[in-house]
Amino acid sequence: MTNFRTSVINLDRPGDPSVFGEQTRAAAAELISRYPAGQGRSALLPLLHLVQSEQGYVTPDGIAFCADLLDLTKAQVAAVVTFYTMYKRTPTGEYLVSVCTNTLCGMLGGDEIFAALKEQLGVGNNQTTPDGMVTIEHAECLAACDYAPVLTVNYEFFDNQTIGSARNIVSQLQSGERPMPTRGAPLCSFKQMERQIAGLWDEQALAPDANSSGVPTEAGVKLAIERGDTAPSYSIDTSAPAERTPAAETVKAAPARPAEDEKPARPRPKRTTTRRPSKGQAEQPTSEHDAPLETAESDPANPADPGTEKGD
Ligand code: FES
Image 1 (cartoon, helix red, strand yellow):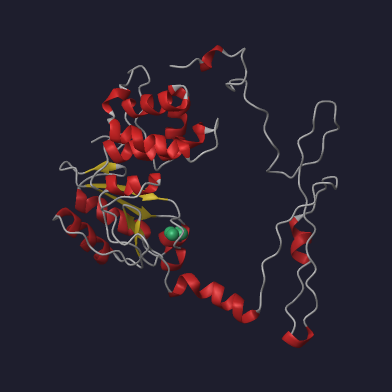
Image 2: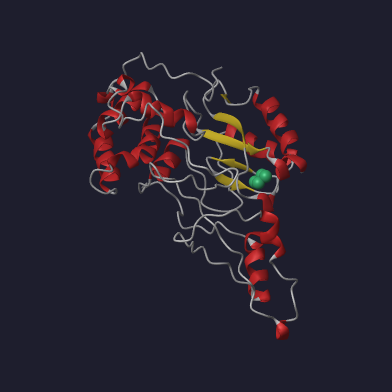
């Protein structure tokens, strides 16, 4: 069994972009046209999903295809592929089962569910069953903590799982059935889903406008409306010199909640921003974690770097 996440992309294999036909090229052209002229490289993410919708994973052919279309090096494309977990490097099954094992789901049984499904499928993390039907992976937070523990099949949600309910879902997938997700659209294949994620209308997409929220999803919003809470502004004064504002001070600035009829105007915490100094400009103080990094020596804009020649 091949591990699709840790396998190494062999850039020595040239890759053959000609395996992608006219229809795929037309779809790629449409995706690229959605970006401003001269910024077509921004289409790399959807193009990689388009490649996966054709081949089930990002092949060397797919890397060469994207590099050719976007005037990037294969190394640059591979760097993106290896950064994001949604890009697979070996064939993915018809159904990708992602089990959340992050904090809340893990505490409520996510790890046990993941272990039970691996045992049922007879494969490990990031592996696919020999019949090519199911790939299983553990996932970081799937942004559905209010339904923990959750799993997704081809990114559709199955909420409030138990070992028994999760086993039942996988049994149905193995027998060729498509169980209905708790929320959202009915299941489709991994390749069909990849086409949708690429941003292309799929004739076979079922109920793309299905409701994806439930009562727990909206509970916080309803409570905020009842309380009359409003969100703070995100406006940032960039003209003021940057200064440190300890998080503790920001928290202290929030008043205890008064009764509705004596509610004073809520003081807004002072926001700060950091600026990167120009040459010769004095260094501005920065927060501990968001100081900008220097551009890498290997930036393609650096003509002195021979390592970014096209075709690397
Ligand atoms: S921790 Fe599982 S969805 Fe957030």
